Image (cartoon, rainbow, N blue to C red):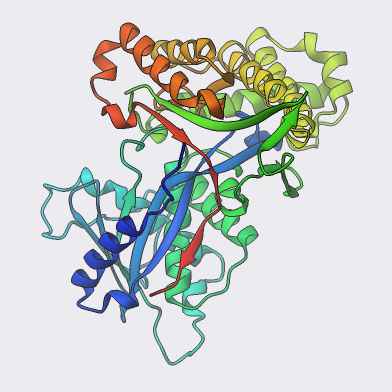
Length: 449
């Protein structure tokens, strides 16, 4: 089955024309940031504890077409949401915890677009991050020039907003790359991983780790990206023949299924995420104290596995479940690396499914519709394994599936999930209900034509 390239020439052309009209410039001057969505087959909910994770980017995501504005002014529009966001790159941005306002301004200055224009907070978060580390935007090549803003249009793959594919990190990375490109600043992927962490952790007040932005910036087509979130070391792992392998004489290949639940809820409005992070740290504190290391930072990656096994009975039940998820998931990641490198997708899939079970039972995330969708995927023909994409409170589930059975599996999932959640499935377009994807390259800037 052929796969339509992403981004398509039509998508690129439409966005370039929109920006050229906004900026009254030539289409040839318009650059485009390609910032893909990511999936996390193994390594769920342990990046914030310094655990080992795996990820890959897919051939869907966010596009940000832009031109340098010629002044400090930033003017942004969205292909999905109403309103126009405007601010200046020489305006000082403040983190959420400071209590100081970071106003999002609509194009007409009215309050009508206040809700819609909240999508602009990631652009201002990118500016905050760049200001926080030596104010990079002031370090343009020609010191006689002022820092430049951008005029741009941002667009996400249809039907996948709030999907658990880390569209927030993809947006943050897109704005970072655009502002850096407009000002001719050379920034390494490692630095941009830290910048996006500042957007999420400090500017927005979300206590997540660095998995999402790392996957978006480091991944390459056909590869599984492995990252040690404690040491920040990473490597790319290819299965034999870029995802195709002859096992026991039979041809094996894979596709990625994205099955959408119809539920939408912003992660930052769910206090349960931050609470679970705190519970992991509480478990680490107990284990470190009992092992005679009260001075060590309370994250579970600082607890030796032997210490956990020796003292886990000292944890109260809730904390014990959080710690069990961390240590078992860390082990699944390491086993998964070997399975992937050998092209054993059935074994890799079983680990994905076990990760999903632990997320439900030990990390205690998920909700009825997402759990139903997860269970439907496990019954679908050709599916190697499945789990939530994200925390399981909204969005979609992912599955690794035999490429030859991907279309049959997608049809099965649509039909079976619609029986369980007819109202939710009615909120999803048929095209977006179950998507068949492939791995893709990481974030990059496509130069002007």
